[in-house]
Image (cartoon, rainbow, N blue to C red; front, top):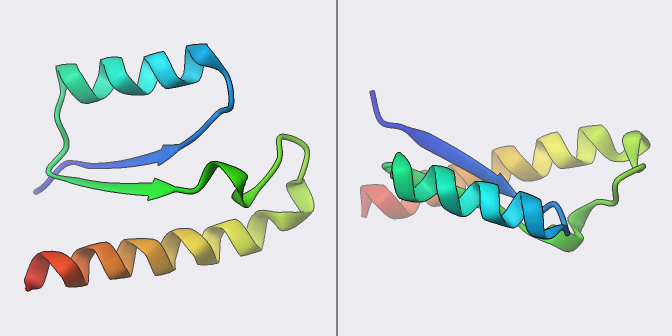
Length: 67
């Protein structure tokens, strides 16, 4: 089963460093990147939109892999 990494920008240096560390140590087979400006830290009311965005971006990424 392929490894999938969903990257959500945290806006902070620690989050970016942690993502780079994980990616370098355990490179994913597929990476789906969520735009950092798609949601704010306290935008809990936007949860369903983020779930939908993640599904859409994941589907597009997997379609590109199929060729």
